Image (cartoon, rainbow, N blue to C red; front, side, top):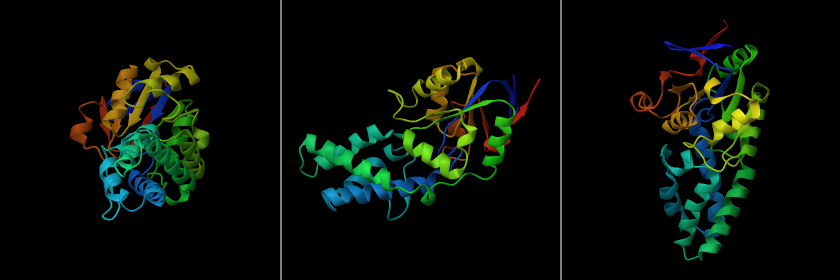
Length: 250
């Protein structure tokens, strides 16, 4: 079984479950593009009155480029964020049933229009690292709150689909992070046990997901927007980026 070297920690495992945004992919341009697309779609249906309400509700200010990395836009699966958005539409004078329908339609159309080339970029060295890990016989999986469809599109655009045995999106499980569902689904599809699995992510919710799934080790990376002091509260070990992961067979 391969050994994963991460900092001073050495872990035997069969599978690594990666978060996507902030771990493999630079999060900021993606979120700004996603927020812009969703707000434009929403404004066409509700009008300019929705702008301030929506930006405050989901945690973004497009004019100044500010993002709340603990807010709904950055952390919530689409179905949860859609309900947050529906509440802002409701405040604009629509019935609750109308608000939910408007929010869902606006999000669906915005997500369909979003072009991967506008917002996806791998962190430096990520491609080579994934190729190395895969060549050592490890199973690799993605666990992200983003939709399965858009996750597949982003991996295809970046040319890294071939490295992953499993993709688990926020719409593939009942309970999102920090629940263990995504890791357990990846384990189910690959036949790897949680005790043979390592989780790598940039947020507390990634680390808690791994802990709740009882994986062998949770490795925090500092390429996202969670500080080292905060990430260390839940991670077994922290490293600068996924490029520090090394594999050695017995």
